[in-house]
Image (cartoon, rainbow, N blue to C red):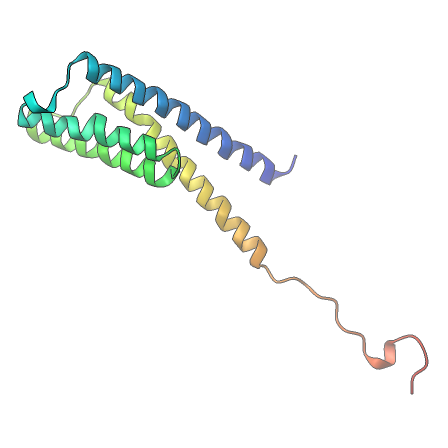
Amino acid sequence: MLASDRSGLGLVAVVWVARLAGLASCIAMAVVAYDQRANPATMAVDDLVLFALFPTAVGLGLVLGWRWELAGGLVAVAGWAAYQAAHSFLVGTFCRDWEVNLLSAPGLLFVVAGALRARAKARATAASAAPVQQTPARSEASRPGPNP
């Protein structure tokens, strides 16, 4: 097996682990939101800000990651970071709930997958742009046959 084949398999594995973990995270976030009867019309402003950042922004990033790994992963990670910053500002501490961190983790996998895909694409572009060595043309004197 060639090294490029192994790296291609690694990329596929990371992408599918990120997708499946992201799907599980989105389902879990939807179940929790439904179970909590999250109605934005009746939420306090603080809760609405936190709700917009964690399940909404992170979930959007995980859904986008199915098509655009790097962009979706960055949206999910940015949503998680913004949630942590807003939680710190509104509540006074960072959110230490392991569920929030665990459900946001597939965003990091999408970032890794996007970086691996960009690296593989750059390598393929560099390999196709490499100059092809040509054999030197023969002079008239070195060609077989009668010389004039």
